[in-house]
Amino acid sequence: MISKVISGNEAVALGVKLSRVKVIAIYPITPQTYIIEELAAMRDKGELDAEVIRVESEHSAMAAVYGAASAGVRVYTATASQGLLYMHEMIWWVAGSRIPIVMTVGTRAVGAPWNIWNEHTDFMSERDSGWLMAFASTPQEALDLTIQAFKISEDERVFLPMMVGMDGFILSHTKTRVYIPSQEEVDSFLPSRKQPYVLDPEDPVDIGNMFQPIDYMKLRHSMHLAILNSKEVIREIGKEYEKKVVPVGSYSSLNESYKLDDAEYAIVSMGAWSLDAMQVVDELRNMGVKIGLYRIRYIRPWDEEDIKRKLGDKDGILVFDRSVSFGRGGHLYLELKATLPDVNIKGIVTGLGGVAIGKDVISSLTRKFIEGKTSDEWFYPSEVEKVELRNPRYIK
Amino acid sequence: MSLNYQFFPVSRPSEGGGGKTGNWRIVRPVVNLNKCIGCKACFLWCPENTIIPTDGKVSINYEYCKGCGVCSNVCPVKAISMVSEND
Image (cartoon, rainbow over all chains, first blue to last red):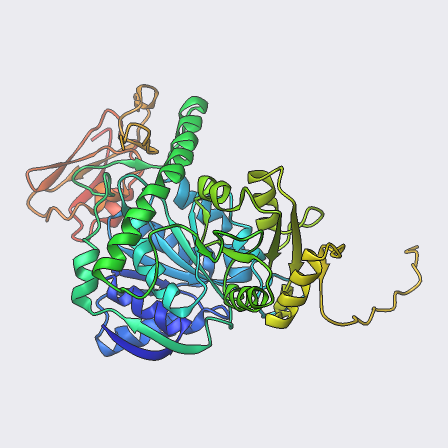
């Protein structure tokens, strides 16, 4: 293991290389482009023994890795924003076919209007597709979760694809110190891929062909159960990763708690700004407020039992969402409210389209919440100039 | 943890009872076994699953073959020729 100052994108590319991926489909979209450029450069230098397929769209990128994974090799691709939406159809095909695949999503706002900055709505819009979904909060975690994702996704108890989210720009382009495991360490953790069925001319099978209604429903039920059972698999694999690969993170639980045990209030968040929230917790603790942080790392599976255990007795919970389901609120807020219907939970949608939300904003919103003064469910820091509307014109 | 819950969308390809060709085929593929190199390109491309890999070569299930000629077109060594049913 060595440590280096690298960006989130570089960390992910190294994780992919160390996982001995055999086929990579590449298509550029900001902010993940840098990952696939790194991988293509590694291939060019002979450091990476993989087929790199240049495709003409994200839909094709997912189709290409779907085909290769069906033939039994370890595959990888990355996307973001419009690209993720463009591959939406193939994302469902992969999950429904029970094909393990790992993909990084460098989260970014979705058009219209054009906006290349950070937001989680693209990632959250794939919540119901049958993929396992983890979200990193540091470049280190992006690397660690990528390597773990291959093992989790290929586990016989799971057999579902997995995407790892990472805040666009905030993590993807920011350099920080990352511990990089050696090839031997990753090899001792990650075995070669095994699959119960593969596309093989010697023993032909049809994958994802026409299903009668009852079989279709049974398949959907099996996917649901596989996601529920993946919680145990994730904890087990996380512990093994800590032991064999990088002993710097904590992966024995799906989500992370910070100073929650004696807390009366809690902040819930996901992604990079959770570290700001962690500092806010420290700051408020110094002021005598009993508060803690619950950081969501896995959206799917959703660790309902742990959330009930850790947050069920709190006086108030403030959820920070960087994504929105229009007309309803933030995704995390909705999930939390469904898990803890009787707890005082408030959700704030903020930080969309790259609106910068730092420690001070999180701190002031949290203090307002604790004082019972929060009324808004949306927050953006300054006045927005309204676009003057024309008088309606009638088309003759 | 028992794996009884696992279920996959996989099935084995097989001949359909309603898919028999009958007597309307105009041309049929004939394999020249001396030329055949056993690459299985015809097997991979046949839309009716009528090519049977046998002993490193291929044979054809004429009961289901529609005579479309795809196998003949994809054969890299031109080992499959399309012959009139009347010959």
